Structures are given as structure tokens and as C-alpha cells.
Image (tube, rainbow, N blue to C red; front, side, top):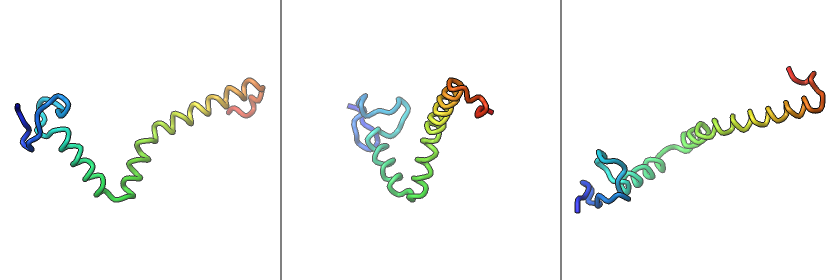
Length: 80
């Protein structure tokens, strides 16, 4: 059986791509270690940036709903 340079087997479950030189197991371990070494404020910033598109989408949908309700109730002076 073929193995990676780290010694892990080259199985379909452990491969990321054909040309990769590192197995999924070692890559996961490395990513967890790098994440644990990242300062907390940077982790918080990365999290906020990652969730921002979802927050904006929710706000747009909420605004559209409020505008529709204002139109339904005849409060067109509130819509600018």
C-alpha cells in the first residue's frame, strides 16, 4: 500500500487531492495547532468577518419585511 511521507496510508478517506503531499490527518492536526496558537483577538476578527455576509443578508431580509409591512399599513411616509 502506498503511503504519504508522514507514514499515513494513501486511502481515499485520507487524501485531499491527487497532487497533495500531505495527508488529511496531518493537515487537520497542523490546522488545529496553528489555530490554537492564533491570538484570541485575531480569532474573534476572523469569526466576525466570516459571519458578516450572513448577518447582512438577514438584515436585508428584515428590512424588506418591514418595508412590505409599512406599505401594507399605508405608512408610505416612513419609506424614503
